[in-house]
Image (cartoon, rainbow, N blue to C red; front, side, top):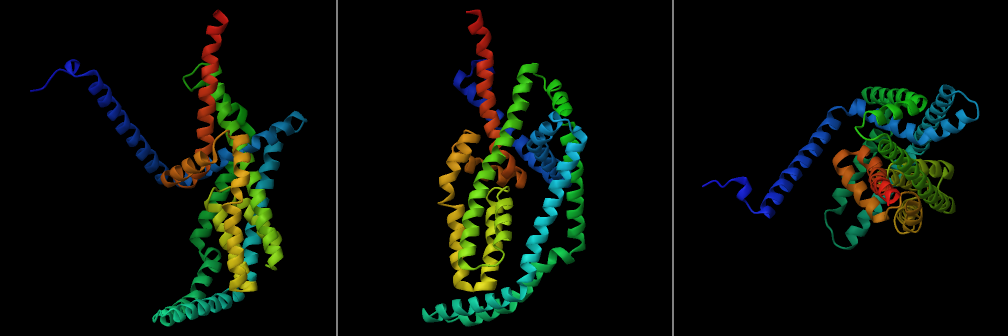
Length: 352
């Protein structure tokens, strides 16, 4: 027989309401994931533009205070970032294509070595497997090296993404302060509370990318010095690629590592490539732990383990956007809670 809700034990009522709140939160998260996946063509450039607007806005603000019109400052910064992206892409493609024939030959030599090792320990199918890998290497190499250039549809998508990102970045840099005030007026909060929320989000994004810059510069220095010491070609390109790839958390660093490993394998052989791979691992692993606590502790005021955990979790749910935005948003939420506590306590202290 049904019992009236009021007659249920209080703890049961609290647990029931809490369970429904959890279900609602899960549904909201799933809906957000679906919406982002459906609208990623438009949302992704807007997210990148918003990040550029928040971080680069400090440069435009400084230029405006020195007398440069905001529109001109936004245009110059957007143009500089676009030229930098083009230069990096040209460096990467040029570096890999210049070593294409060496990559195929060195990878075949490396496969032969692995086959000999496996034969020595009694793995009978090693020779057949090695022959299949060697036959596949040239095709894989050509697909990796020329697929982006020859894939018209992928190139068109990339051009559209870059164009929309440049468009969004320019207007967010130019009209950022006005947009911020409009958002604050429509947040449903008191003006002082709304300013705290938006200010902390922008501040966290800027400090997060400052921390990433410190970590990226450290990683780039370690990898570039190792490459130069081992005689790997294009150490300048390696340094630039490693540094810029660090702005995509976790994924970017290891993607740049693959690029460095391929260059080492192409020019110096499998032994040097393995040493280079170890250097990349140390730079992005144990050695990075020396710098991360200093960088993220001083900027985000978050433990590196918290940064890593929320980055991985949000990346699994929301992709690249989650990887980039999770840590600064968590930092902004923590800082906002602290500021709200101080703000709400101020009238009581004043009245006492």
